[in-house]
Image (cartoon, rainbow, N blue to C red; front, side, top):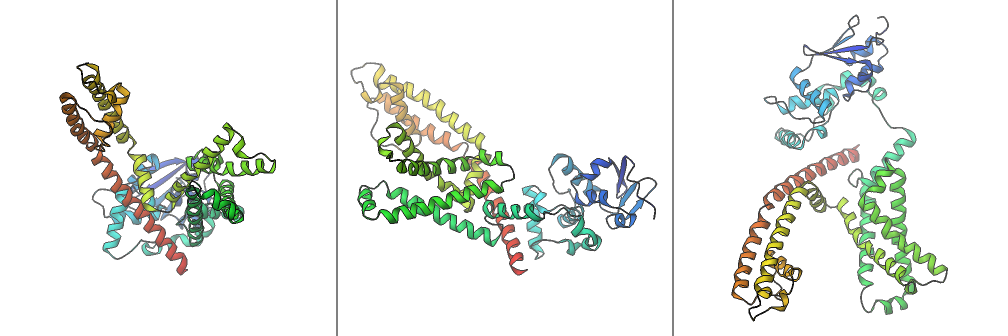
Length: 424
């Protein structure tokens, strides 16, 4: 068969009769695995393992595949959004995706759910390349041509998944379980340290307290260092809020140890000692680490991120109403000087406290209006508060349900992957 003509600057893909022209550089880094592997072929025989036919003179590769499905796959290549073709069976389109080297994770969430429902109807968890007959075309060169991590890079990726993705493997789940235990022990000790009898108990069992605290801090320090070393982007790692909290919460322990060695007790440092105690109290935010292990906290965090516009809108509603009602309440209860001045409403900021607890229907009872106008205003404040707080709730609720379904689906995929690993 003669030498391949990849020296040409243009390569043509003919998919179901539709032609697409690309430069050689684009083919090399093409997002679809089957297409990008064409660039590495050294002979026409290797090319024919990836496509159905090849025209050496025109440098044209023929694929006998669904042309309309490939149009949508090309839209994904250009825009990063992949959805099902209207009127095409979900399983047929998924077959095309697997052929070109895509997975169900590339689909938008709504289409992922449709695919999972369709697979459940036919009694399958997922389709594989063997199910659709792709492996026969790809197996000869799959292990060599598919990009794979080896050596140190593979080890770093495994370590990263172990510490960052608790559901990625059994070892990752074990590490996550140990981390949860240490977080709970640390939180219990933090809460107990505020009890009146803690100092007395600490003096009688000082060694035990020091050992438990040292072990917890040692684990958190080692975990933070390992996660930093195996992170793909060190700067992005340092910018994450939870990682910043980790560093802030760990630092006071070591600063206190250094000062104790130098004979400088933290209690005698004045402002510096107060700062250390405040930073030490930041350990309570370690509870946020549990979000990586519990679906409910993950759902809450994702919902807040996706609904930040609705949350801002809710805050704007509340602040506008609070400004109006607090000004009117101060005027009716104190500003008119009708002989019944209410000292609890001496200023607008003081009246704002009453407005916020009324709008949220908390009603502590520490502040309340005494004039007729003030009571009427209070009723209007409560009713309007209920209405304003209810307006964005529908959007937030639907977003919460969608986030929960999405995370539950992702968790099910992780579980299926782990089951296959165990069986293998």
